[in-house]
Structure formats: structure tokens, C-alpha cells
Image (tube, rainbow, N blue to C red; front, side, top):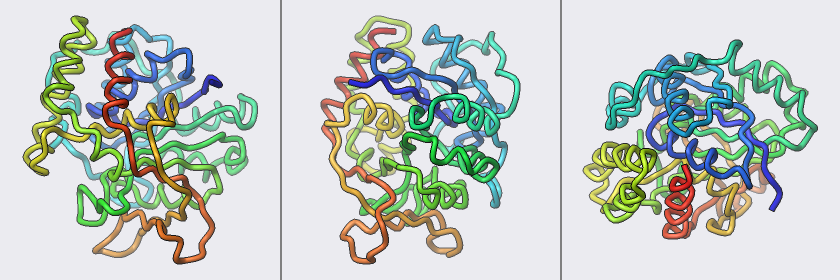
Length: 313
């Protein structure tokens, strides 16, 4: 398998944190060139501190963390402390980061990396609102054809939304940014709620992380203990969906996922459906495909991969 060189744009967030761990624990398949942070689950200062904490937990302070956008392109910031807690990663007590963010701005770092690396060799993984990537595409249109692929967690097809009836959180926070990305012509893989809602962090799966007997395994279990409480109450399910690591799992083991090429359009204006990923799953519009959209996932295989890789840290 070809080793992927990736840039992770993120707003940690418990599930973002576990996605970072999965990427860092998979050096044979993935090289993380940089982590850029964005306001989303919590404001920028906290998402940046959280990313630094995760890299320190994984022993990978060699990866630069570059803070990016403090607010969406157009609308006011909407955050999710009601799910992730005040810090964005409530649950286990982690020390304040001993390392500092890298200098510069996350948007500039995205542009710099894409210009510096050979065209078609860098995959951009968006685990939160797409503000940084959209701003980079607007600021430097020449980088669009240099991107190998964007792999994004966001949206919903048949599953609807999780923050409004129509909109998933990441897209809802900055629909105008998502619109820029989906109209950019860059190859995109979208992992929506239809997939992630099948990846439930059941009690047995959480206990597998705890039974690893490592600091990282224990922290992962405690993150999920906190994170799942909201979704279990909301959905009445056996566990909360573990969203963002699906992005990294798709890169490592795409055979775990099934989907199809579709046209995806982002609603930016309607007061009822702003942030909706209008997905032409049944090919009724004739609009050209602009994304591979996943739907099915082998959830047991997904958690097997997560457990095995986090056990390496």
C-alpha cells in the first residue's frame, strides 16, 4: 500500500483526538506533515491546546501544530461544549501542553505545504469545519490541483443532521467554507453520519481500549466514557457514534467502507436547511459527480483497527 502523506485540519474534540492517535500510530501507511487547527467544537485556543496535548500523549511533538481560523467565513461561530465539555476533551485530566504551537497561520501552512510538496502527493483530512481549507483555496487557487484528495467527516445523506434536522455539525458551523471546497474540483471523499452512526462505541469496545493497559488506552477509554453519554441519551443507542477516526480508517483500510460517487451541493441560504449536504445519491439531477460518499462500514473491523493501532502507542 502506498504511504499517504497527509495534512490534518481539526477542531479537537474527543473523536478528533482519537483520529489523531490513529494517524500517528500508523506510520507505515500515513505520514502526518502538519496539524492545523480551527474553531469548531470549541474556540481556537482550546482546539489548538487540545491538539498539542494529543501529540504529547502520543509522543509525537515533532509534528507541527499550527493554529488557523478563529471563526467561520461568513456566519458566527457555533460551538459544541454541550457535547465535548468546556475544554473540548473533558474526561481524563491531561496536563497543559509543554510544547508551543508552530509560528504562522494554519491557512498559510496549508498553502505552503501544498506548494512545497510534489503535486498530487498530499491528502488533506478535514475533521472539523472546512474554514481553513476553504480560505486556502480562495487565497491561493493554484493549490487546488495539487491536492491528491480531501477526505472529510461531515454531512448526512439519509441520516439527516445531528445539530439541525438537516445539517451535521461540521458543515453547519461553516457551510460557506464547505461550499467552496465542494465546488473546487478537488477529489473528495465524504464520510457522513450515515457511516459514522454505525460505528458505536459500545461498552465492550470501550473496555477493549481500557484493557490495553497503557496510558493512551486508558485515556481513550475515559474520553469515550465522557463523549458517549450525550449521544446515548440522544439516540437511545448502545453507544455513541465515533465519527472522525473514520476519515483516517478510510485512508488505511478503504475496504472497510462502501459508498458511491455522487454530486454533493451545500445549502448556504435556507433558514430551514442551511448546512445540508444535498447529495444526489440516486443520480436524479444529472449534475456531475464531485465526491465519493461512504455509507456502509464494517464497524467491528473499524474498532479492531482502532484498538490495535492505539495499542501501539
